[in-house]
Image (tube, rainbow, N blue to C red):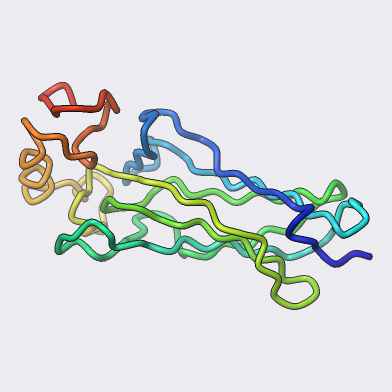
Length: 173
């Protein structure tokens, strides 16, 4: 009892607001906020309380291009820790990633050793397409980012599709 059971525990990333096809993060935090909601239960379906739980973002470079890095513009770490409450629930959030691509958001319970609960796969983009995450949020989008975005105009390139309309990107994006 009290040991998290991955088959009885659950998690889900929520929070898409700007884009319905992927998370759209903005350096100043005014875009989407991705919140990982975690519920830990033991083998008897009892909530596991006061359990430290880590949630880690892992970048998947499956885009076949030179942009193989992820950068956090305002958040301090790719790993965040939450502690479950009396109902076995913990939440952690991110609201500022630079770059674009595909990530796994992985949950690990840490209260009785490291128990992998699972991962959820998500796509994301940002106006800071080159992932520079310059010190000032106002300047994290520069001419390089605009060039990358413009390269997606007239094409079906997901990172430039800020309005999630699908298909060919236009200046509306």
